[in-house]
Length: 309
Image 1 (cartoon, helix red, strand yellow):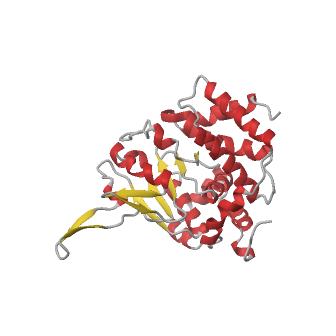
Image 2: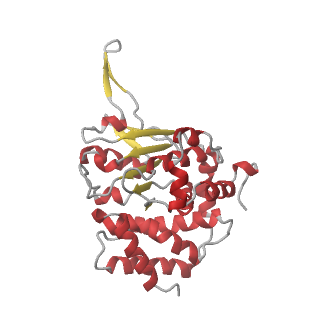
Image 3: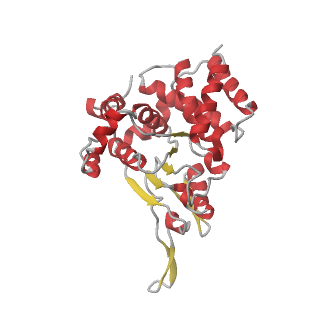
């Protein structure tokens, strides 16, 4: 069972709330929660104006994680993310001023608008949970989760992410334009920020700090691990794929599947958890510079081809 210090602070309540309030985006909220429980990074790709940033702010509010936000532009420098080193006349030395990266939840808006040099400022942080400044290693908060949005790569002024950075995102998804019924509700909202701030905090920091152990305790049968391997091997042979699925992708697939089982209060991973996680874990990797939507279509085809047993 899930460790719930109170009904309003449980993972089950988080899932139930998003099901009721984030209409049309329940699946994305569910898998985003699974990624956050594993400390995984999240990439949201879609056209401007469909609510990518609002969705991220809602998740931050509900999860209770402290958030800092970066709006990427084509003239950004790595120091705008990591923090600058400034000469301090009084102390006659350079002093490092921590940047917004020192936050449990870092929202990076329109990451692919930033130049490649600036994008690379996130590589070490996303992998090692630390940054190196002037020869010193500085640890980042625990948890440290990057939630980035990006515009489709065929847009104006975009710099496609390199494969090394794409692979550091545990999951990706699109929000898409909602159904007309849900869109009618959305366009009538007069103060989106107030809507976000009025949402309850359903989780606390200790949920995330203990989640890794809880996720790792979810059993996955060796037969299902072989199913994971068949999915990976089929995807690696897929002729239209942009990237070769890495070992990290396989690890993320197992972790997200375990986290989904935890959310469902299951003691073991079921085949449905792997099938649910696979498109989210692999779409950005399979699609590469062709985008998440292209990768999602490939992931669906691969799932159809590979049998559970």
